[in-house]
Length: 162
Image (cartoon, rainbow, N blue to C red; front, side):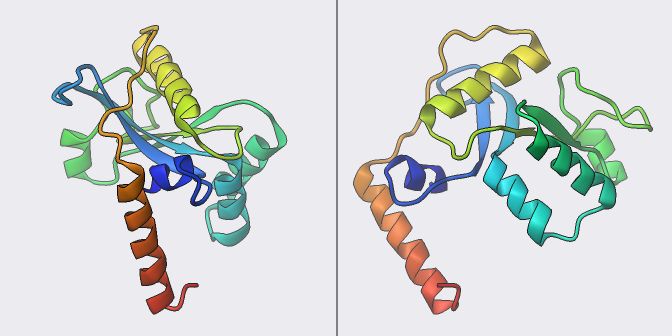
């Protein structure tokens, strides 16, 4: 629902996880992609205590103007067996495919058109499929989004975040 907070003008959205399906019934999952924008990566760069290698990768990304993919690889035996992506993807030193893929996007915030563009790029890169039409499913109403946003703000106030 957070994405729609941005789309309906309540706030800017700088990262989002999308699920890409082959069918409109959401039965044939193609893949899952987490999209980070420049502000999200700047925040990680400035605020998180990440590995030196990861920070250097972010620093390089912020200095350039191109989309980059980042991969999370299996950490344990269960991930190795069940959670590697099904499509072709870069392998780590152990020869394992990632369990998760992130797209680092050069935009400042996300909107519907940008999400569609990201889905098309993902399908082309990892499946070799040129997708002509991306359809957003299950779009909430303005009233649902407003209620969700107001509830989240109220919870943040109660927790002392705002």
